[in-house]
Amino acid sequence: MYATGNTTPIIMIATPISFFRSSDATIGKRLHAAIVRDDRISNLILLRLRARDLDSDSGLMGSGFSLLSLLGSRPIFSIPTRLHALSQIGEATTKFVVWLYFAEKQRKMTLIQRRVPSSLPQIFGFAKRSFNSSKFPIEALNSSSSPSLTHGIHVFHCPDGVGIVAKLSDCIASRGGNILNADVFVPENKNVFYSRSVFIFDPVKWPRDQMDEDFFKLAKMFNAMKSVVRVPDLDPKYKIAVLASKQEHCLVDLLHGWQDGRLPVDITRVISNHDRAPNTHVIRFLERHGIPYHYLCSSKENKREDEILELVQDTDFLVLARYMQVFSGSFLRSYGKDIINIHHGLLPSFKGGNPSKQAFDAGVKLIGSTSHFVTEELDTGPIIEQMVESVSHRDNLRIFVQKSEDVEKRCLAKAIRSYCELRVLPYEENRTVVF
Image 1 (cartoon, rainbow, N blue to C red):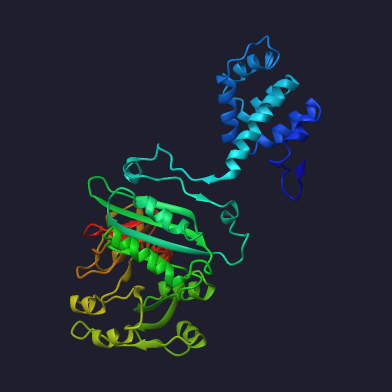
Image 2: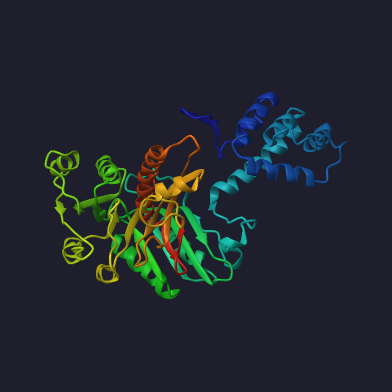
């Protein structure tokens, strides 16, 4: 019996009897169609056939056992090819393989088991903690089976210990959720644990408030330094303010990225120390979309930090898109939230002003841009993202600048997306973990 549709036919678990009522040739074809879909089960079948103590004269395996040994010694044959060839030897051999196949298939489909391979590098920390197989109903694995399922993201930063992954997994599974992706980082000899999990869940069965409470209990259990959960479809977008000076290629790229939905943020305002005429592209765009533009003429003596601080109080973080002013430590402490800057140079080289000219004079063969968090010291904050572009002796300074500007836009946009998707975590004093 087959389940037919637009996909390749799948042999159903409840129908092995139809195999035994078919001709030997038909059995071979159906078996091949089944095993080619599942290499893991095919491997188990081969191991059981090899381990079985069978008399070659008994008629059960006959010359099939010899052929199995031959094919098993020839790595050029795939597992499905070996079993398909074996199934052509005789009806008894074929039916024995079919019985093994369905026994393994039935066991597999009874419960879905998730295991972490023991071969993962020690740096991921799995060797130090228990990771018991979590069991989920089959229907819970199909995100398309229920239109109410939505995605969540959780990041965790705590002292390392045994059982953290197991508890995180159980927290999600106990509410009917299913982990789609999990990243773990445990630095060597640092006794600290980082993780990021992407999962699907039913908001009806796991309300948003309950989710916060569940992860809060975990954070308290493991003395977490950071535990953040976001549900992009339910939670409000991050509110940001963009600060820019005269150069506007990064600003324009962010505005169009926001308009196209490529950036998961709401731009609440644009602040600049450069006055723009009403008929310029930026001003027309901002007016069309109802985004305020604030021109604050600044100088070294008066950076207008108090006014900027008042304008950005309702934001979640700030983006400096080629804003050519250095904030004071007092401003950073008063704002108290993250600020992402783009530097048009590959830090830690070529800090400060005019890094393209510095790179050109140095005769480098790679130029780049760096997105980093802002700290009191100029261009030394923890790095979020870096991108590079090749240059050669044929490129003049103008080409250096053009290539640099293109890299800047992509680097800044990716850093913002990574931050909003909870991929960026602080690591040590001046480093980051970026999942």
